[in-house]
Amino acid sequence: MTPLTAGTDPALSLMSTPMHALVLRAPVTVAPLTSIRDAALLMREQRVSSVLIVEQGLLFGLVTDRDLRNRAVATGIDTQRPVMDIATLAPLGIGMNELAFDALLLMARHNIHHVPVLDGQRVVGMVTATDLTEQHSSSAVYLAGDIYKQGSVEGLQRASARVPHLQHNLAAAGASAYSTGHIVTAITDAITTRLLQLGEARFGPAPVDYVWVAAGSQARNEQTAKSDQDNGLVLDDSFDEALHGAYFRDLSRFVCDGLDACGYVHCPGEMMAMNDAWRLPRHRWVQLFAQWTEQPDPTALMLTCVFFDMRAIHGRVELLEGLRRGVLERTRGNGIFLAHMVNNALTRQPPLGLFKGLSPLRGGEHKGTLDLKHNGIVPIVDLARVYALSSGDSAVNTHDRLLGAAAGGDISEQSARDLRDALEFLASMRIQHQARQIALDLPPDNFMDPNEVSNFERTQLRDAFTVVKTLQNVLGQRFQSGQF
Image 1 (cartoon, rainbow, N blue to C red):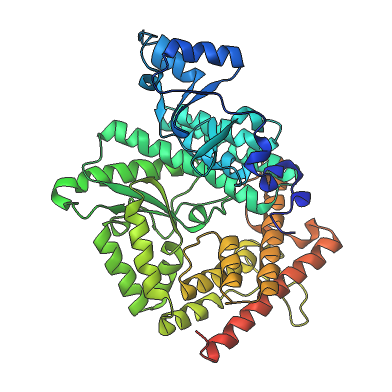
Image 2: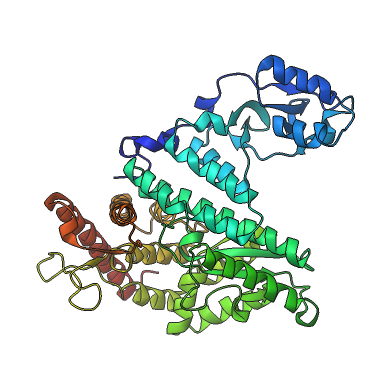
């Protein structure tokens, strides 16, 4: 059940394949002063779609066949000029021991199709999107590429309509929930980034630095095809409301409305950058987090749960990194705040009856179903967040937080493994349930009738919920004994 086990995820062997396994030949390189024509001739002779610009063993740039077409031939540039004149300088690269799946996400998030492979600072090879085409999930790279080609919200709507189909195909291929969450979220990131680019084209360059941050499941890389939006805007402290306020109001409204049009509905609690409360200069965010941790009332706890899970999507990343470091310093070992967070984490209980049998909802629109999200997945997310806040762990993804909790001694290795397996199973059941709905042209939701699945799967559901309940009890006992 672990998301990193290739056997459970045949369509995504990228999850266990190191980059060096995909490097089949030495990199094709040229010196910075090589002419454009000579670089093109070398690419033709070597039958490659790109060439790396290397000097004294260090990577300086990258030129692709697309660069030759768009930056040289189409502009009529003199092909005797240095190849550096048309290169992408300081290209994004990846370590040879990192997973190929990370290269997939890098391509999808940044709309690139060539990734240099590095051993330290030494270039050892090149991996392209074509190298990944045998993997079903690589379609995410091409979907992301299509997103970046769109010049309107309407075009992004059409592209985003393919996300449920992508999730359905991943589910059919047996992809793990962990990898599916990362892939689906990468597409959301691409749509968000493209909306910001379109917004800046419409309203002009930003008057001060900013970073657009995702919160909630997008920040954790745990999205599925059914998701609302949680986001915020951290502005540079040079922001002046009188001078700059209108620009960022227009930009954030454009992006949030665009996300809504693409299927990421407006947050019911209005936790979005288009709300003045969540579009603030950095020092005001610092004040907010200080207030929430010092006076943790129910509203503050709810907001902490959303906005502690933050990840930079576009803009000046340093604005968020400094903010998160400050927050972690405030929460690490903060007994009063953590006690409130523990109580909050124990409010959502798994759907188990008196004798640990499954206990579906007894009334309402979804009577007879199990809420896999709020009574299964969210309790695990909440537990992992408490561990991270307690130890000052900067990880955002729930799986990664559980790994950190075990490494730091907050819970045992076995308990962390049990929770990770429970999370993977419950999230996979949710994705499979949504895939069945997508196949029937129904809107995906989180409410699964236990009769949809086999007796064996119902037993596994009960076991997974029992793991969550047991670790909730352990956390409660730890809180009562003051072990924070």
